[in-house]
Image (tube, rainbow, N blue to C red):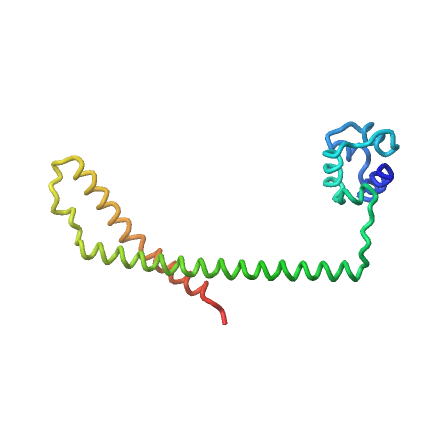
Length: 169
């Protein structure tokens, strides 16, 4: 039964013995022996055959599924409905997370701007004779310089993100 199923399914997929052998990394004679019933593939090879032929192992072994077409369609539609519901919930959750991340980003930008304004570039009055102070002061200046230039662009992008991810009515 296995030998006939392998041969029938292989032919229905339009594969020659040679093509199937190449996909399974065996010689053509091995496929021939399986199809003649002279040998049987081991369990790992059986799984590989089912993957290559895109057929369940149970079908290769000759088991038949006793669901009618109406039951098949009903089961498939129920599974699809569950999958669609899960995907919709996941999409909604991602949108909510993104929305709150954008809001948080705006809050952080505003807070850092407020701190920088309150500090009023304190590093300008530091004594730069100490190397550690000089490095820290230069790093603080670079951060402030980059932040003041990039933060408005990021802030506008975050506002656009908030608008795009808001809950749709």
